[in-house]
Length: 240
Image (cartoon, rainbow, N blue to C red; front, side):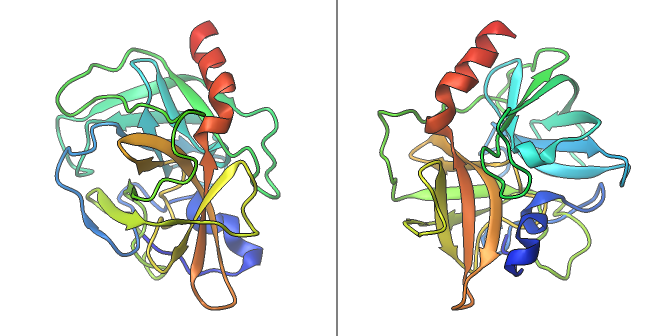
């Protein structure tokens, strides 16, 4: 899951995966099958392309979280999936999308969105929600990871057929404001991993958002900080 891009194209890198049989995380390795039962593959339909993909994660039987830049005309989500060809995965349509009202498509601030499922997810050993971080949790956790089916290299035209994961270390950087976590290095989320969870200490701390290449050649990966949006998240899940 890594990306190499310049600032001008920074948001396109993580944003949209390729075709239906798309890519992996740059660096990292294949995840143990179904070890992340909260992971969701979001299939999106847009006017430009009939099928694209983002990552996501299950919050409860009704809601999935992803990135606001993954907005589309319509969506389906895949739950309980390790391989794109798993026959036992659940495929559910989305009833309503809730991108954050203050999402800015130019600088990707407030890059967070909730998807209300048309029918309830069925919890199994392979389909379970993940807890969300809040203001009482570690403000800069040390041990974190990201996972997804996004591209594994900038030369790939397809997403990974199997879920991959990679460890990341959060850093402080001037590019990152108070609503964003950052990690730095040559391994991290790749194109198609947008919307997936930054998982630290067993909780979802962030949403994979964007990345940019730094002058030293390493990549700065950005994640929307979930704790700062808990009131918004809880309000939507309660009233919708």
